[in-house]
Image (cartoon, rainbow, N blue to C red):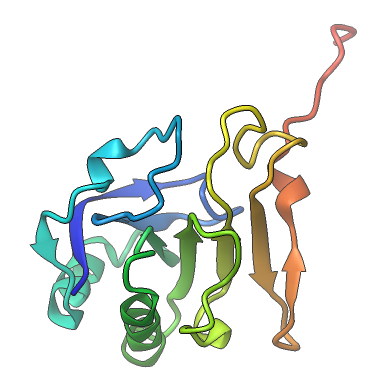
Length: 161
């Protein structure tokens, strides 16, 4: 059973999209340098389909995406909720942030529009670092996934403005 601690409306986690980010607790990854250690313990409210619908309806007019932030302890449950969003909340897209090094075989990737893969490694940085080990994948119209990580990299602007 998935549990979540809180939610937020975010603008950077999935490119060009306003997202309802749901912070799922019980993270087994325990990445050194993790900025979300409060998600390690398995606590918070149950993330059922009904709870998810209530969260979506509370933000529906402002969001284009639902983002599952974590859920590595039960990827099959994340997959079921992603499928639920696709089937019951027409028009909303779905993204998932996983701290694992590979996409779980327990999910159907077609239930997701974006999947971020990779643990946070402080010496390599997050998605905004060209050295990062993390990867962001976007599902293309043909169903294949494209690595779009470079879209997150900050570009230096000269002082000649």
